[in-house]
Image (cartoon, rainbow, N blue to C red; front, side):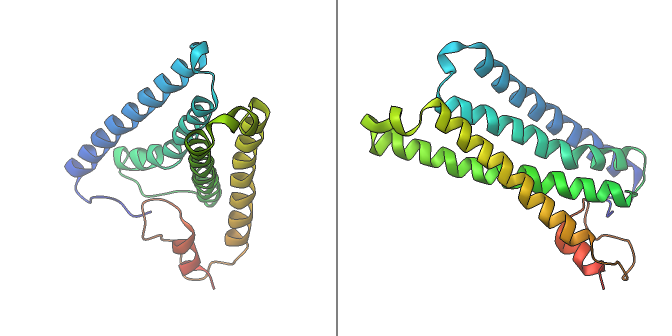
Length: 176
């Protein structure tokens, strides 16, 4: 993987900076999840989707940032082939599910604003669970197909990625 910096001082600065950002994201999303789960008044469609979005955000930031921080802390650039495939799968999974969930949240707000009298019938608890499950399922299927297709190609251009995490365009540049 590509390193952010070559000097040890900048690598440690990178580690500290990203550790702070990572911990802030964990704390903020953890607070959102805890607040929504504990407060019965927030058990509505909008907050159900916000809870799902926070879980997806925790997953997406936990896919790339810890490996990047570890590489900076231990002055290494290595990632295994299986680790790269796993990182790509989870990155695609969380990203696709997040995009789908944001689309669903936009629909939720559209119905709340433009069809307020039909809101309860269009976005009941079963419909919300089905839409969230569809978002998660779409993310899984998209990630599975992209990862399987990308890693089914043989690599003949070396094994050095010009990126600080595994992503499809960089891996395709290394394939035959």
